[in-house]
Length: 237
Image 1 (cartoon, one colour):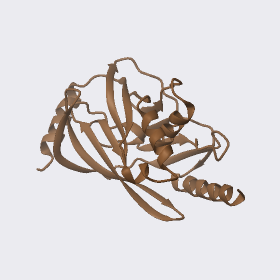
Image 2 (image 1 turned 120 degrees about the vertical axis):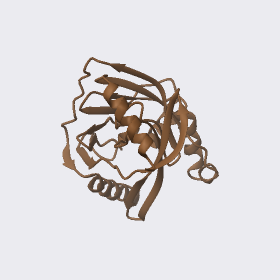
Image 3 (image 1 turned 180 degrees about the horizontal axis):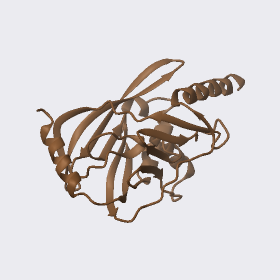
Image 4 (image 1 turned 60 degrees about the horizontal axis):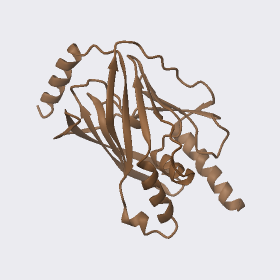
């Protein structure tokens, strides 16, 4: 009975919700972290990322079967600030959700552009809570998850917090997150936050095409390749 209200509201709204496609615009910010700011090596880059993030915008486009999350072009900043912010957003290339799977090409500069097509299952291991808040006039509920990184140094788990809206029964959100009974209006992944800025729905179907270039590999296989390539570059310097 704990989440009955959320799911009933989502079901009722789903019946009345007729929009087949739309576009959601998100702003981006990086939360300050004294540990990083005071770090002699990372401090400068972290401050650049915080500044650059203030000027980034992202767009989530969807139709009745697929969604695309992408960075909107913005060349008004110094290149270094912009690049540091984009790295922290982990969204240099488009991210797609299709049939509960995430699709995206590589974009870290260690390999040829679009050399790989990474496919991974949609992370749906959410823990729902009764905590709520209002975002842009919508009542949203808090759900938590984890972003897990496995590399040569071990396994690292970073917290993920999503505020989803049952009034908008679209199970997607920023950065390839989804699977909740409502659109994610705010997403915090570790110290990076995507916040809704504009919502525009339409009955016209927006065409979205999945990427086809690159060797198909899993996300873990790709991370292993990234780690090996980065280690090789470091050893060669």
